[in-house]
Length: 378
Image (cartoon, rainbow, N blue to C red; front, side, top):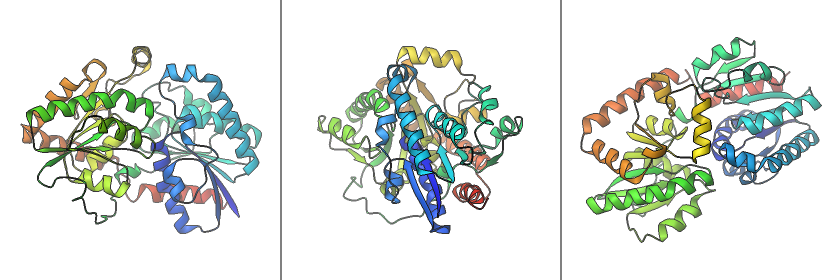
């Protein structure tokens, strides 16, 4: 029996990995899996060697503060993988954790094939990393076609598979009547998947809701939560006594809610692709502590935070970063869009045109699973 170890580092990577594993399970019934994963992989029956929360750190300062803990987790993970003896180590995103593990595993057992899904953003910073990747990566799966040149240059096997979050999902019939007031329009809110992100953005978004409720009485606000942070968000919402705010974590309901939303306010990240794919206008928000922000500003090569804006080299989706990421600015931006429907339509059109350029020709998860399958037969 063939074995695959799936290595993720945060909830978004767990979600991406699950789309590929679903395809693998459809085509291969004889694979044994083990992982560092979260709720999405768990729902597919794949055990994680420890809770994903134990390694979900964000920002340079938190990494520094947890340096020894991270080192110990890397070593623990490497030992478990070597003990499992997989044919393939399938790592997903979170390169500062997953690729360190992959490098150590490859040095101990070169026979383990290493496939990494979601290339590190070398086009944002630290392009020189690519040279080192070819020492321990057998194949890199790319979400965006423009990334190929960086890996072709170093003769690293790579395949553009597109982004699975842009795949058309099955339209599951879902009754939303017990969740929202049908007479009110929906504004979807995304406070991030990591606890550290949620702790910063949630109070800002709650203040934004307060400002909206003072001026309007026609909106439902729905927080799209992960299994990891839903209780944190619910506890804070309960303190407000707002009657038009809900928290959801079920994937089918989240998808239905998003597709029925008038607008979205989202933490910068891959979720913006899902929002754009659902043809919902949005703004992007993000905030980190001053030290982290200073380091990021010093290191990054791009002007924008959002991938849609980076590809277009202009602001298609407004970004409220750092000082601008406050309840008043979010309120002003959202109200401005709501009062100008033509601006919302233009954003949807521009985003849709961009997404059409970066979608794979078929199914990205199918293409990714095909690459993984090819290594099972070698």
